[in-house]
Image 1 (cartoon, rainbow, N blue to C red):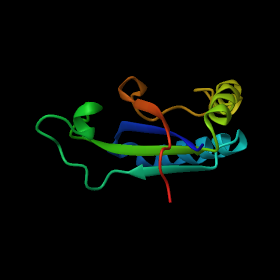
Image 2: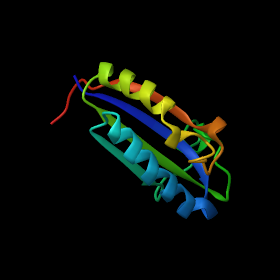
Image 3: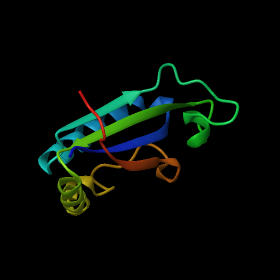
Length: 117
């Protein structure tokens, strides 16, 4: 069964080009280690909520933009093996591919796909 990792982060809007470069390298690494597809999306219509919202979840500041990312894996087993390899891949070392955002405010989760078309 397909497995998906999802991520939401707040990126300084001024770092958009750095984020794109970071994403392109990260996508290559994820695909090299078994990901079927990776999507990186720059927020365009991400409203603040009254009770909860993406901006609230990542404590997005006025000079930041919410980003939404997904990684699609063929299975949870492939995902687990892929993540182990990704964490050991020197291309993902922060000195080689620094995160252009505050990783402490990144939220993520793994999801079993229960329906798809």
